[in-house]
Amino acid sequence: MSDEKWFVEHFDSAGTAFGLRLKAKLEAVQTEYQHIEMWETDTFGYLMTIDGATMVTSRDNFLYHEMMSHPVLFSHPAPKRVVIIGGGDCGTLREVLRHPGVEKATQIDIDEMVTRLSEKYFPELCESNNDPRAELLFIDGVKWMRECEAGTIDVIIVDSTDPVGPAEGLFKADFFRDCHRVLRDGGIIVQQSESPLLHSDSIIRDLHVNMREAGFSSTQTLPFPQPCYPSGWWSCTMAGKGTDVTRFREQDAAAKPFETQYYTADIHRGALTLPPFMKKALS
Image 1: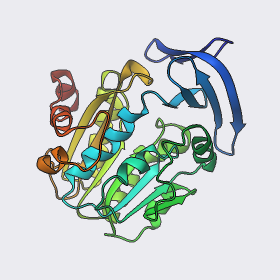
Image 2: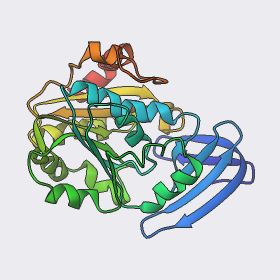
Image 3: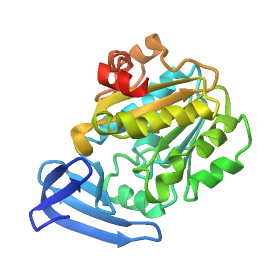
């Protein structure tokens, strides 16, 4: 909801809310799939919302995009072929293509308008869209994964919205089975996995169960701060196909040939250590 001065997103199930003071409402578009709005805020730059839920802001998106990409890519020994399901704002794609060893990154988002609005309002996130290694598809990611050739992908990044509406199928065991089949041996999937504080004993726990049921041999959740999302604390969950996702190329991460605003080898190492309440919820 919003009034003339504030955008406020209520999280009724948690009894909390998040608000940003507004300068202006810039655009509103109803697509075949969802209602997208663009705002200019007072302190967080531009804000994109989808169906009334905060998606991305100029100020804090680096936290999410860096943690959705660099931990999984440094956990794989040599990622060359990467697929991003969702990710229409293109920030994760940009981070993936910072890795010089990546030969091709395919981004599959069902709603092209997310990308077109991002190109207009978040051009810094879209600076790699014309990279010759980038492929942008605007189709159903679940269907694409179901039809993809087995053993052809190194890393799958599921950069989705909440597990409702178009993204609901991206949290199901059947989808993870398709991902397991598509990944090469040693491949890794990472899925955005909501708030550790609000969802450890529900969405995050179920993700671990579904990923292991699909055949993945190891799973690991990594928490990180995300001020604009429910509780201000978010997570991603990795699963490895015959590989241990609690280990990563620490020396390579420490010597990465690009700058980041949040991710470091030390941050990665720390994120692998879960607080006791999460360990209990996931045991």
